[in-house]
Length: 463
Image (cartoon, one colour):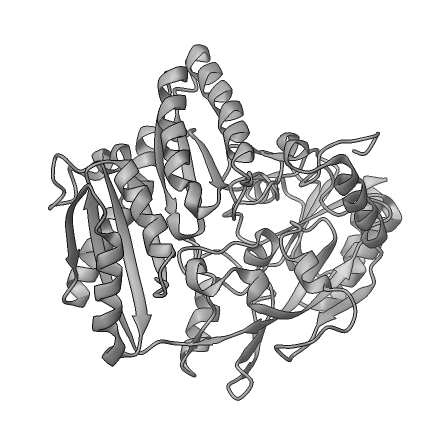
């Protein structure tokens, strides 16, 4: 059956767009998680109708289909679960199709990088707000599949708030168009927002119409250092409860600071946490905006707050934050990295609970992330060659998820679910909601060929 399927694909795609050699396939079997799979083959379509034909072939032969971009995701959402799956790489569908300045929109294919979208928009004085850390390489399709955001989401929102319309292919091979090119519209159900964040389980996005935002003419950057995480957490709540919304509000705890202290000058030994704060707007307004932010950030426990006075100083301040991820990879390449979210007002409580969990489970925890959204990246460090350490880290993770849900939070803010978090989803969503979600999947994908076994947990005999 597989040979017949591959022969059929060979009639649909030229040889350069179909990879069957094991060495070629291996590069498409993993993402930025620790998981690895081996697809049956890799298809590299270059236009929408090829995607339609591939989906129909997969449906006819009963072959699972996994869409992917550059594989920068961290949850295994693009990793094949077996060797009977076809990986559909959209990296060659990377055109910027339209840039409409008057209507502030851009139309692009899913393989375009986030950076390519930003560069195109900037030529007309705009930007697309989602800005994940991997923006230089991650694809638009991946951003939409995960609803990936980044620091700017605190002010400008996620892909769901910044996408007007989609063109996609369902699990039956039908072409679906959602949304409008207008910023208002309530005709029918909102299928655009439904597809965004669905991790390729409902349809394969082949084109997106993005809502652009004008670039602000000026920006100010500040770094605030605090005695402890509790002081910084209280400052986050104070900042987010006043009228000036920062365009970035990033958090690092004391353990994170210790990891980069050797390479970053100007961090006092007493630093227990820091905030990176950015505000954008019209130059004549920024002095007042900065004054308001400094006032809000000046909670008890503030040790130092400084504003960058040049682009060089801006880069120097951000180097502290950017140095963290490489440092973590060196120290703990197989760490558990979670991106939990709680209401902003409960961040102080969350950081207290994290300290208690670290002590209780004898596990080192390093926290950083997008504090303005209540979205913290909680990193549990352990030696994977030490079974006892791994067991303690996994028990700590269980307690972490319980704490987050008790605080009316969610288990994932932007990393998605994929395989890594799938087994915990039923702790957040009630059984009836899950039944409705599976019913929705059956409508889009009646044969269950699109990224099966991802995002939704197994319930009532569902795979």
